[in-house]
Length: 413
Image (cartoon, rainbow, N blue to C red; front, side):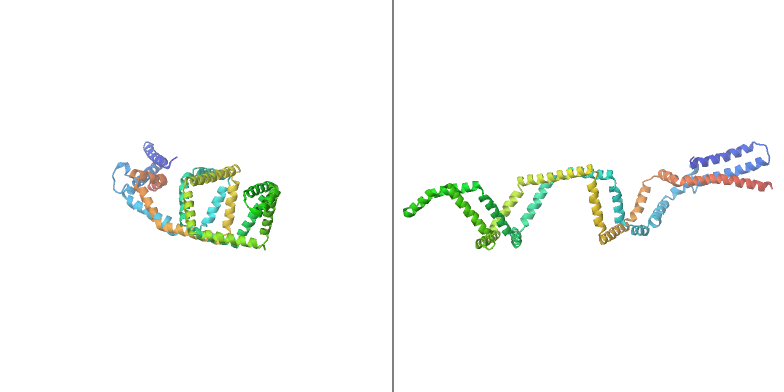
């Protein structure tokens, strides 16, 4: 039963009791009851008037010093604001409370509880999949091309190439490249089809040679003596022998070839005109449609791989995601100094935010109360404190009844 209904019922009981006793024969019990009901009725009416006068004019009569809350609305609002700002939610209490929080630890605990649930991990992966699928990779292509072209345009290719070449030479990569090339040539020259090709080419070229006199006769005799197979075998043997000589580390030919390679490489790198031409060519190619198509294809491929990985992990219940999170937590937990620094930084940021915006609490309270008309404000206050105030009426009626009994007894005595 609502307290307002209970208060009304108590007042009605007192009124009905008083009226009922007026028509009963006079005796001691009736006199006592009439005195109790009369006093209870007076007390209930008085308390009803007092409680009602807080919120509105009793019976709509503009009696002085009634509807006190509305008459003192501004004072009430200021009192609420002052209580919120200076007592309930003052800056010092908020800041002291923030200083007791380990924000990073609390956040890690919340995330750990969240990621420990399989359904939550699957939902995160589903959201990540949707986000990846919605990525506008087509719009990113021009930006990537522009950024790469800008970097290439400002880059000093000659210096960079010289540095790279010097580093590679210091590490012996040029020698390794030469050995790799020699191995390739050796494998190629050792093939039967290569021997046949060399013999055919040599035979055709020897047939084109025109010499006169004794040299010509001797040369023609040699050409008539050897056939294409013999020439191919001879040339193959010479190539193989030469390659073996080049592979020897103490071979003078090897040292000379390496020196010539290095000289030619640095001459190429120091040719500014050729470097500039190479840069222009690279810029044109980089900004062309072929490069755009290549970049788009790569981005789409990356997106497809990412979606596949997310789908696979979602099918496994997000184990990979949880493992990644657990590894991250373990790694971060080892950085005690970083955690403390982050705690201090976050706490300082929050305290600064509170200091700068604490006044907004009062503003928010005032704005919300200003938006309410008188009827809404009274209804809100009655909802919050009116229930307890109605018990004043109940207590007034009951207390009046008891006091009335006592006063009647005293009067009789």
